[in-house]
Length: 464
Figure 1 (spheres, rainbow, N blue to C red):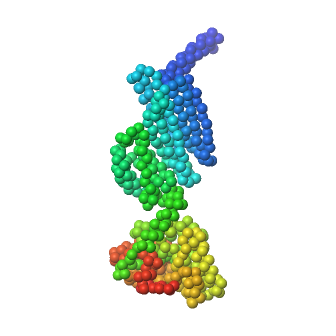
Figure 2 (tube, rainbow, N blue to C red):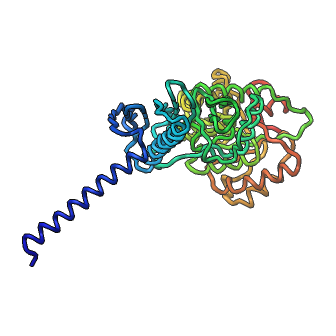
Figure 3 (tube, one colour):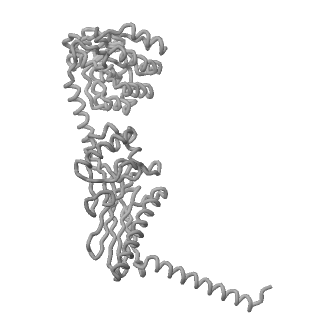
């Protein structure tokens, strides 16, 4: 049992030790950051949206002040690295200041200013552009930039390699631009440490003072995003490209297609796909066409376009032609005039409303049509298109048979009938494309092919 006197002595020793620890800690902190003695700190939050706030922290000491405005998301995986980086920059600045003061043997007033711009691309994709300014005796010494691209949904940072599928090509284009501006810079190989953003349809790379020989200010290297859009990761492309730029890209593609001149004696094939879009098969077909750099014509059912609008838009975005294949795939010879008109006209408007493209080609379901169908097609400015090669994919549903049936009928100017609703068709497509390429064929849309098959009027067009 400890008596009262011993207990008092132990308590006294403990209090003395605790006091020494506190005094030593305060002294150590004062020695480490003398500029922060008697610092007053204020923190304010300015809400940008429901996900992000801008948090402003101001510090005031006798000869040192700082203001740091940083994004605050309440996501530890993102907030901690950003704020840790900013605090580290402040510490480095103070350490350099102390070295200068030792050299000149006097105290120097200084200020650090950190500002953040927030670029929002989507409800979960943001880029933070943080500018740091260092002042000594009221004169600006250095200005540099740090950027963070963040994915709120996955609570992660994204690098250039995440945003671009061909980041090497992007680096190549940036290096060319840097050389044109006469900047000697460090290597751009470290994709994770490059400072960049996308703003106003421009890609901006920030080259900081320590990375080039200009002066004490950063340099912003800009490239129009239209030069880089082909290298964007499909996952982020829609988020990063504005509606204005998307329309500009679309116009350029259309102009390029319109100005394309085909050799009358060339070996051309028009691939066509009916009945889509399909939830999965259409995407598989699009991936294969992209791999072989082949363009095709998709005759869509407007009911499926409304079921899968995003897939229909992907067809357009990939540069393929969109045709009309009615609303419900009904035999137009077996319905009354009002239903027939709706299947031709309403389907056209429905496809246009979703894709932004007005179909100028119409393929009647089952290839069934009559004079009334041709007349209605003419009134609605649609050309009737059939086919000259039937793959019979709708019948056999067998990859090997689809391939064999198709290649046996091929000749220059053929219009091939396929369906992007059968997995077996999507699986046969690479085999068909390989064969056609080996035979020297080029892939064109139906609209490109029509002038070469001596066709005129509204059709029907069969190819050769």
